[in-house]
Length: 191
Ligand SMILES: Cc1cc2nc3c(=O)[nH]c(=O)nc-3n(C[C@H](O)[C@H](O)[C@H](O)COP(=O)(O)O)c2cc1C
Image 1 (cartoon, helix red, strand yellow):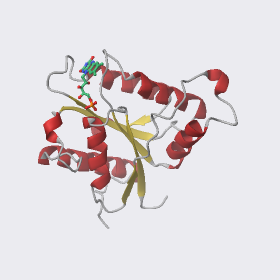
Image 2 (cartoon, protein in one colour):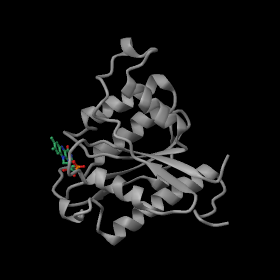
Image 3 (spheres, helix red, strand yellow):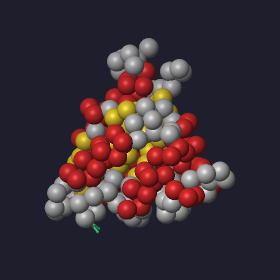
C-alpha cells in the first residue's frame, strides 16, 4: 500500500446550489499531506438501474462509476434526504454498485447536510446509508460519519463552505478516512 490515500467524493444531490455538493467541493479544496480527492460527476448520467443491463458492455456511466470506486482507497458521500429516504437518483447509483462488487470492504463515510428546517434533519438518510452500504459489504468508518445542519447562506460565492467549524469537520473526516486506510492510527501528514 502506498502512503497516499485517494478518496472518491460522491454527492447524492444534482441540485446546482446543493449544500451537500458544497461540502464535497470544500473537501476537494482541503490540502492534507498524503490525501488526494476526486469529485467526478457520476450521478446524473447513470441509467435507471435494471439487473438485465448489469453485464458487459456496461453503460459508459456505470463503467465509469465502478472504475472510480474500484480505484479509490475510500469513498466519502454527502447526500440530502428526500421524503424520508435517500434521493432516488442517489439510491439508483448505489444500486449500480451492488453487482460490481467494488464497494465490498471499501472504507466509506458520509456527511449528510440538511437545512435547519428539514423535518427529520436527515436522520432517515443517515440510517438508509448505513443499511444500504452495510448490504453491499462496505467498510463503514463510523467515527467519520455525521449529519449536519447547514443553510444555503453557509456557502460562499466560490461555492465553498464558509463556516470554520464545518471546514474543520470536513478536514477531520478526510484525515480519519486516511488513518483508517493506512491502518496505523497515525494522523495524516505525520512522517
Ligand atoms: C422533495 C424534498 C423532500 C425533502 N424531504 C426531506 C425529508 O424527508 N427529511 C429531511 O430531513 N429533509 C428533507 N428535505 C430537505 C433537504 O434534505 C434539505 O433541504 C437539504 O439541505 C437539501 O440538500 P442540498 O442542499 O444538498 O440539495 C427535502 C427536500 C426536498 C426538495
